[in-house]
Structure formats: C-alpha cells, structure tokens
Image 1 (tube, rainbow, N blue to C red):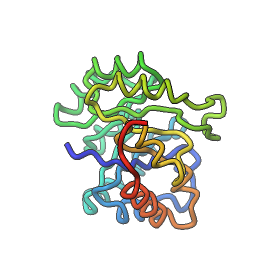
Image 2 (tube, rainbow, N blue to C red; image 1 turned 90 degrees about the horizontal axis):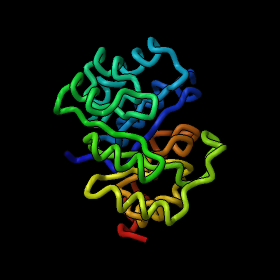
Image 3 (cartoon, one colour; image 1 turned 120 degrees about the vertical axis):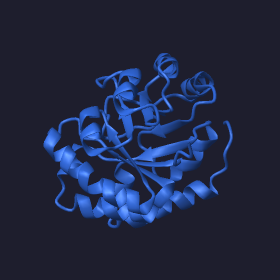
Image 4 (cartoon, rainbow, N blue to C red; image 1 turned 60 degrees about the vertical axis):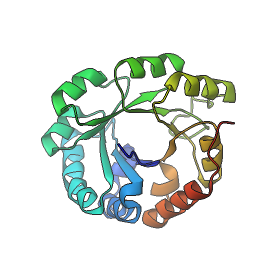
Length: 214
C-alpha cells in the first residue's frame, strides 16, 4: 500500500460551498497519486455526501488520486469506494472491513495513546493523530504537547500516522520531524484562492521537509 502523505479533508462548510466540486476536481487532478481527498461532513445529509462522492470518484480514479469517505460506511458501499476514515462515532474498523472487503484501506482518527493502541488492535491501516496545533475547527483543543506526540508515535509501531489540526505550510516540517508519515489539511487548501495550486505548494513543502524524529 503506497499511502499518500498529503491528505486534504473537507468539513460541512466546505461541502456546502457552491464551487466545492470544481475545487475538489482541481485538488484531485493537481495532486494525483500524491494526494488523498477525504469527504467528511458530520452534519451534512447522506444524500449530499453520496452525490459528492459519486461525482468525485470518477475524477479520483482518472487522476490516480485516493478518495476516502469519512464516517459514512453506507455511502462508501453505495458508491463503490474502497477507502474509509473512521472516528469515535463510526463503525468499528473490523466491522467496516467486513462490509467493504479485506482489500479496503481503513484509517482511524486518534487523539491519544489509548486510541492509537485500540486502532492498532482493530487492524487500522493508518491513523490520523490530532489536534496537533490550535485550529478554529476544534477551538476547545489546545494542541498536543511534543511529549504526547512522541508517546503516540511510540504506540503506533510500524503503522503510519498522519498529523492533523492547524497545519499550514510552515508546520509541515515540524509534523514530519515528530515522526508522522504525513499530514492532513483543511483550511490551508479549501480557503486558498486556488485549491489545486495550494495542494502543489503543500506537496513541495513535503518534498523539502526533513524526515525524522524530533
């Protein structure tokens, strides 16, 4: 499995924007195999998510990009999507895998060592870890301390983990130096004037960043 190291995640506000599909097409085509697009909308209706994923799957397949459906295993099944990202409110990873198939790719969102250990036990292919830095989408979260990040990294074993939360271009090298395999971004791409070009900037920051443990 060659998991991308750059993950672009939506939220309810992004999904509701009039130009979302055009922006998402640009993200997929500019990023290609180096990017994973996560369709996440915890407060968005199932039909809207289904229609978005149905549209984006064809573009992702053409570009060679990865497409994840977050939380909604039912939508993934309906659209023939093979990749899902699961959170605390989602089906357990083993149940999701039994429904979608053994060859699916499952990510699990974690916020500490205990959840990382549970994700490993449940057979997650990779994990999201956050919130790493303060972000408006999670105003109650102050961000993990470096000691917590190191503990999470130690608990991950050989399972790749993706840092998420308040990651701008200037944070990419710090996230990778902490042991993360990659990073996830929301506002840095969707709030940019040209989301496709923003993805290219993040990929360039990724290529320039030193990799290792802080």
